[in-house]
Image (cartoon, rainbow, N blue to C red; front, side):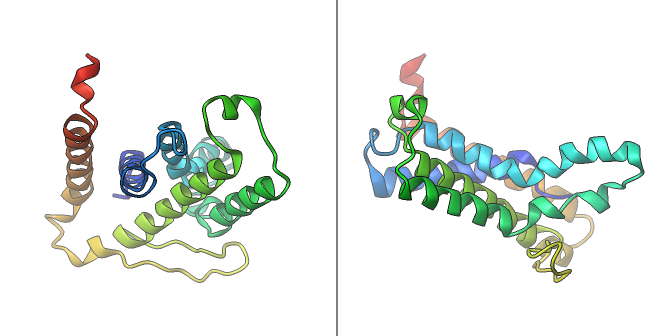
Length: 181
């Protein structure tokens, strides 16, 4: 069982929130909208699953589509360089600016989320081909494969539960979310 969208989203949201809280400490410089952007970035590599739904009717298998083009280092790099380009030409979008966001940061955070996805996929279970289609070289620790077969199906749900509990406790005790209800 691969990390699900829940794992990817929660990991990105928690890490970007921790970064925001411990390093930036300014809501105007780093609004919470960036947390949503990180969540979106964390699922970009799994867009190949949506593509699979179409390619299935043309005879493609899930393994032929998933962890190919979108699970490469090129996606985070494209997003990162888009951020550099937007910063270099000082490109602005009024809707983003109204929310105190900056377009280059949006691209950097999308790049972070998608790169984190690759790290999680290649560390927890299986491998990725970071340079596909130019190379079939695979990288991955596949940590779950070292666990007993009885335990391995429980690891992803356990990780998700821990991340969700951490996020809920963070929301309550750090952000005082119950004050909004």
